[in-house]
Image (tube, rainbow, N blue to C red; front, side, top):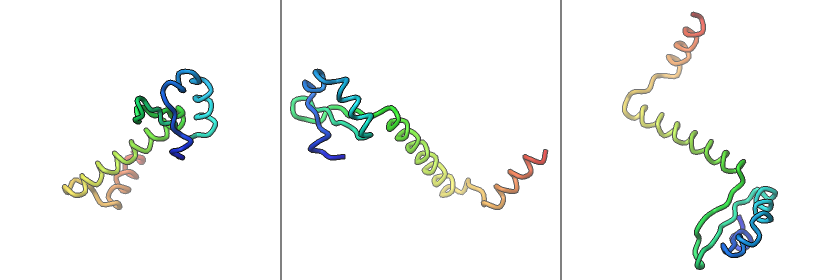
Amino acid sequence: MNVLEDVCPISEFRENAATLVAKVRADNRPLIITQYGKSSAVLVSAESYQELLDKIQILSEIAESEAEIISGKGIEQDDFFNQLKDNYRK
């Protein structure tokens, strides 16, 4: 992200919304929209947003797994794979 290029006042966004949305999609870079000189919102492509959601999901699952391991609820890797193999044999 280039803060100098990727910032747009809301008044400019209102006037050029379609063009700016197309630019965000083409450049695959977010656009920071300002209001009263301060950051107010961020416009990202739907694809970038989905990628972000996917990454958040993975990180949440990793954090949950780490918490289970710390609390002693995890299982050893070999035990997991043995259980997995047993389930597929049934």
